[in-house]
Image 1 (cartoon, one colour):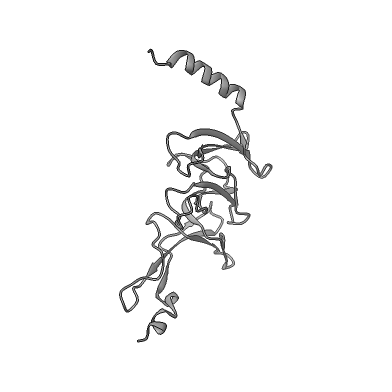
Image 2 (cartoon, helix red, strand yellow):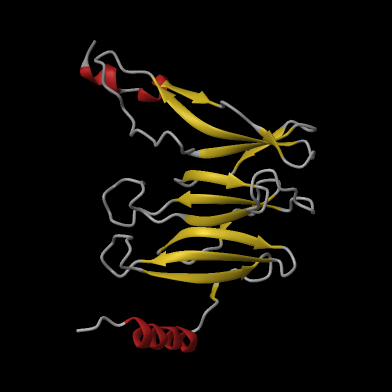
Length: 212
């Protein structure tokens, strides 16, 4: 077989893998997280980049009542996790119906190494419970560490690491707290303003400075 024929249709070696699915709140709406398998070509090589084992590259939403379906997004995205229980711990009941689904996403090649991996920031995204109106709710160029939905205020509170301009998220970077009101504000706001930060720095400097 010629090299041209061998490389003409690598897409034929792909196989779509819907290994599991879940139903959202007895609505009949099903989520199918997508992984992808790849068969080697005749020369034993592979045509596509390897994805992390714990990641998904998209999600199909299926309305089992009508058999209508759609993709979560058509942009390049690595889905690390998804959550329709509002960040509650496993086994704790959520007292209201799910109106939102949350996603931990990597979609920015932050360090320009042509990969999406743990060196790139994880963002918090949200959609409605039908997998539509998919949008980011965490600040740009910041890595989300943790988040929680606060039912009484309809806010999401999140802690994020802000890079200090070395294109690397590490313990030298500042960890900040942001909030966003779901479906009202699309821009997250920092919770603790500069005055309290300055006060904390002075207190720490007063009490924990090294003795020469």
